[in-house]
Amino acid sequence: MVVPPAIGTLFIGEAHWDLDADGTPVEKVNLCLTFDHRWLNGVAGAQFLSDVRTEIEKVSLR
Image 1: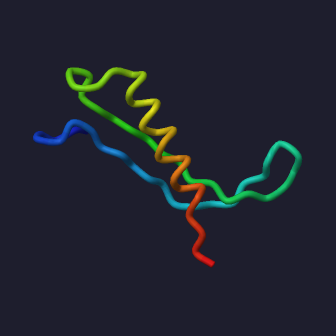
Image 2 (image 1 turned 135 degrees about the vertical axis):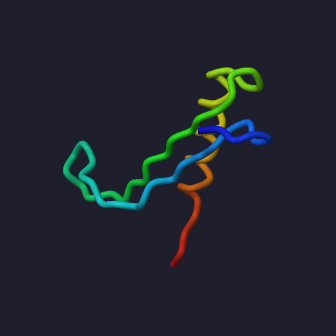
Image 3 (image 1 turned 180 degrees about the vertical axis):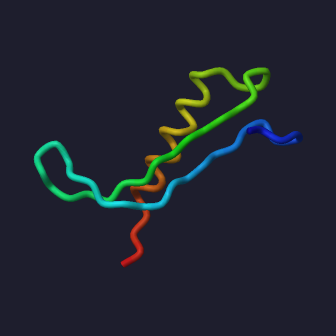
């Protein structure tokens, strides 16, 4: 749901462990973006999520 004056809402799920294609455990987070198509198109939304993913992968808490 997008509540004005926002043009989008990003939901970030809880971090969890999953197995990669080769069986290696990796920590994952689900992202879900909803946005007002009058302001953004699908390409812009996908690029935004890609940028968020790139930045999250750079974070190190250690």
